[in-house]
Length: 95
Image 1 (cartoon, rainbow, N blue to C red):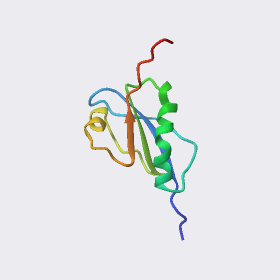
Image 2: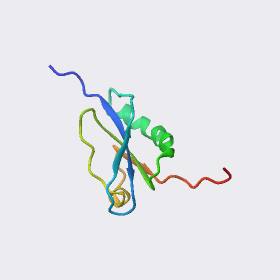
Image 3: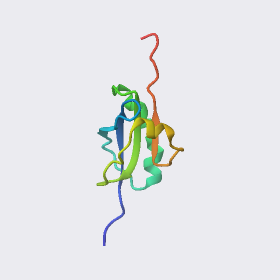
Image 4: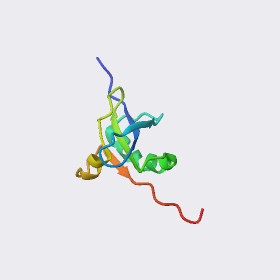
């Protein structure tokens, strides 16, 4: 009998428009539930502020699953989804 699925957070970096998103990193932490994974995505997006992409996406998925192919344009046009969170890095002022 297989054990429960573990979930991971993949951080995707996206270009503009129809350029495809690339997996920039995977978070080492594994989560025992989808809900726990989702709860951690916002903090992981904040940690991904160093990535040189105009759009950064955090995607929860079962360990071993492939990333969903996405473009920045698709991400921005979608209704909010429980397994996909994105942000545009803020312009830094006064640094």
